[in-house]
Amino acid sequence: MQQPIYLDYNASTPLAAEVSECMLDLIRGFHGNPSSSHYFGQAARSVVEKARAEVAGLLCCTKSEIIFTSGGTESNNLAILGAVRAAAGQGNHVICSAVEHPSVRQVCVHLSELGYDVTVLQVDGSGLVDPDELLQSIGPGTVLVSVMHANNEVGTVQPVRELAAVAAESGVLFHTDAAQSAGKIDVSATGADMISLAGHKVYGPKGTGVLYVKEGVDLRNHMHGAGHERGLRPGTENVIGIAGMGVACRIAGMNLGRTGTHMMNMRDRLHSRLSTLIGAENIRLNGHPDRRLPNTLSLGFRGVRADGLMRELRDVVALSAGAACHGEGISLSPVLEAMRVPLEWAAGTIRFSTGRGTTPEEIDDASTAVAESVRRLRDRGPE
Image (cartoon, rainbow, N blue to C red; front, side, top):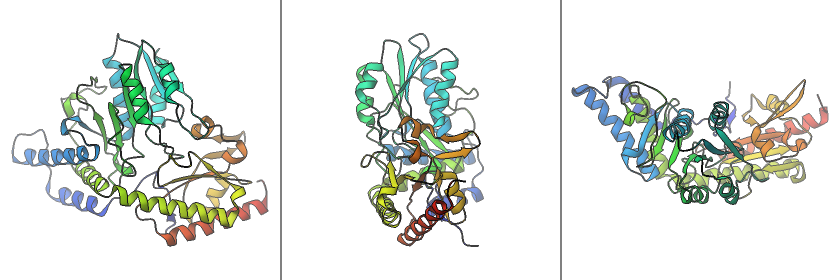
C-alpha cells in the first residue's frame, strides 16, 4: 500500500540520514555512563560534549549555555518553573501570549492555580503580539515573559527581538519556545535569555530537547537527583539521542537558507494550486501573510468541516486540523480563537506544513486530492 503524502512536518520530522547513521553507530558500540571516569564513560562524555558544541553552533552561544532535556515540553517547563522558583520573594507575575503551545500555556495555568498572577497577552488577527502591550503589562512583580518564536499552527513569527528588548529594559527574564522555528529560520538572534528546542522538529530523534540558558541566568531545577546538566536536569544523559540531536542541529545550521527557500517554494506552490483549483474566494489564509514560517500554510476552506476533510484525505495526505466537530458543536484551537478567525473559516481550517523532502510532484498530487475532497464534501452538504 502506498503511503500518504506527508505534509505534517510541523507535527514531526523524519530522522535525517546522517542522524540515523550516527545513532546506529552508537547503539552498536557505546554503552558507558557519561558520568563514569573510566574509558567507556569518558567516551560517552565526549559524544555528549560534541553534540553540545553542535547545538551551540546553531544558537551561536557557548557550550556551557546548553542544557539537554527530554524534549520541548520539558525545556519549556524547566524554563518557566525554574525561573519563577529562582525568583521566589522577588515577584509572582508571569506573562505569556494567547497563542502558546500547551507546554507553555498549561504551565502558566498551573502557576495561576498556585497563586501566581498570570497575564495573557492577546494577539491581532494575524497572531502577532504587540510589544507596546507587553511594556504596559510589565510591573514591579514581573519575573518572566514567555512568548513563542513561531506559532506551530499558523506559522506567524513573533517580533521576539523587540519583545525580548522590552523585557530586558525592565529587568525581566524572557523565554521563547523556538521548537517550530529551529531549522527553518534563524533562532540565534532572538535576544532571549532562554530558548527551547525539540529534536524531532529538526529531523532529530524524539525524546530529545534543549534549553539554552544565557550565562548568568538563575534557574532552579524542578527535578531532583544527581548534578547532571549543571544541576538543572538530573538523570543519566540519553547519549544516543543527544548525539542525534547534535547532528540534526549541525545540519540545520549548515543548510538553513537553502532549506527555507525550498520549503517556502513548496508551500507557495501548494497555496497557488489550491487557490486555482478551489477558487481564491473559497480559501482564507490564517496567520501573517509575510511574517510566518517558510513551510507553514494554514488555510480555512469555506463550506467544509476540517474533521470531515481529514477523514476524506487520511489515506492520501497527512495533515493537521484546526477544528473538531462533535455533538455539542465545533471546538476550535485556542490559536484560531485568539486570532478571532470567523467560525465559517475556522471550522474548515487545515494546516499544511512542508519539509526538506517535499517534492513538486507531491504538492501537485496533494492539491488535486484536497480540491477533489472539498468539492465532494460541498456537494454532499452538512453531515
